[in-house]
Structure formats: structure tokens, C-alpha cells
Length: 384
Image (tube, rainbow, N blue to C red; front, top):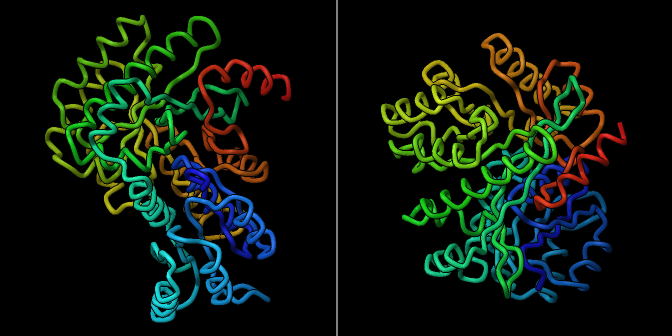
């Protein structure tokens, strides 16, 4: 079985693109197609860790596909993605289970990227029975590493930074995505150890790049537990001083969900981070319910526009209006905007026309090991 690979069958290219982007941003490898023959051939070649299946496609009967999968796959989670109504989806789920398939969940179209991400996290967390003890030992053995996804300044067209993304290099299982272990770590005391490791590696790497390669910012994701730790600002300042790194080179990303917890402590920690020179980004902006309140109350310096809006903005008028509104609002508030999920040159140019500041996505660069960044920077500059 291919570790942490998801195979997608859907007739809509933009849906496949969005599913792939969500899966890849969570550390999954992907194969997507609208051709049932290619879908079956890929599964026969190497059974994946999960399948995402649309049940309603022209000239393709999704229920027949389920029947065929029952003869091919054993114990591999199947996620249904469909525009069918809820009752029909539930019936399809029951039919799949009756045929011995592992039905991991269903999502109705149109769907939010976060809903799919949570389902994939649930699948990954149950894949291979990863335990807290295993993760604790992995941290002690230094098996957690960082990949970096570059981001582009849309005015200068230069790579100005990269987001640090945790990966677990397991000696037997290979690359384990963060969706398989970060949620578990966040529910336990282990998130402190994981955060310490990520901070130490990301800050040290940023210092090396700024000294030897290029001036680059580093974006680091913070858990809710980290931003409830009153000692956190002093901890990261010590690390930056140890490596002679300007705090202004660090951007801490915080999700809307994390920003809703313990508001007094949050204001304390985030304000002190800003006073020390760090920048703060509210991640996945537009997908929560408290975004505007957080912007008024907390000292954020940038917004990350969620990929579910960016990746569909060329085919959905609603998505484009949402992206434009967020960019305009951020500019009026004096905040930088970062659009994630940029998959095509058309999206990139439209974002530039809307006066978005920074873009991130697979069209610009995939997450990569630190040692590949210098070559990537050289190749990108040469291609301009």
C-alpha cells in the first residue's frame, strides 16, 4: 500500500484541483483523474492509503465504481464527495459498508476545504495506529523534519519567504504527513515538544539562509497551546538572539480557531510578540465566524486568504468577490495579504491585478527540503 497517497476520481477538473491542493497541503501524495479506467489502473498498480470518489459523473455510475472497489480494496478508507442529497449519500455509505468497504465519510458539494481537510486528518490519524509514545520517541530521535513552501511577492516577482511545514521521516513507514500526528500532539502535552523542535529548526534555517543565500522570511504555524504560554515570546526571542536573526524575519501563523481561545492570555502573548518585532498572520481567513472581531481586537499584521476561495476564483464569481473583498479590507486596515492555493498563472495574474501582496501555491513552488531552496531560488530567478 502506498503510504499517505490518495487517489481521486471526479469529472470536474477544478474540484480535483481543490481536493489535490487540500490533500497535498496536509502532506498527502495525490493522483487525480476524471477517467475511471485510469482510476482503476492506478489502484491496481499500487493500492493507495485513501480514495476520494464522486458518485455522480457523466457516463460513470458511482455505485458501480463502489462495487468494483469492493473487489480491489480491503480496509482502505473511501471518502465520498458528491452533489447528491444527504439521504442518497447516506444510502451510498451504507451500501459501501455492506459490500465490505471502509467508508470514511462523505461531503456534499459545494464543500469547504476545511471539511475535507478534517476528514483526511481523521483518516491519516487512524492510519498505522500512531501513538503518543511513538511520536514522543520520534521527537527524541529527531525524526521530525521541516519542508518549506516558497511564497512570492506579486510586485517584485521575487521569492521573499517560505512557510515551514512539519514532516515525520519514519524509518520504516516513510514520510508521515502532519495531519497524522499534529492533531494528536495538540491534544496532549507533546505539542510543546513538537513546537520547540519546529521553532529551533526553522529559526536556525532562516538564519543560515539570510547569512548565506538570500534574505527570506519564515512563516511558522503556532498551536493554540503555544499562544497560551506566557513565556513563549521570551523563548522565541532567545532563539533569534542565539542565531543572530532579526525577529522581523519571522511570521507566526495562527488559525481562527486558535484565536478564539482564552482571549485575555492571547492578547497578552500576541501583543508582546509584536512588540518584540515578530509579525502575526491569521490563517485560513474567511472560513471562520469571528474573523472581523479578531482583526479589531488582536495585533495581526497579515491575512492569509484560504485556498478554497483562491483556487476557485477563476470559475466562481462568488469566490472572486470574496477574495477581492478580503484584499480590499486588508489594504484599508494596513495589513498584508497572502493568497494560498495559487495553482495557475491566471490566478496569479488576477491576484496581482487585485493588488494582493503575496502568493503561495503549487504553481509557484511545492513544499521542499531546506537543501533544495537555494537551487529553487536560482531557477526561479532565471525563469523570470
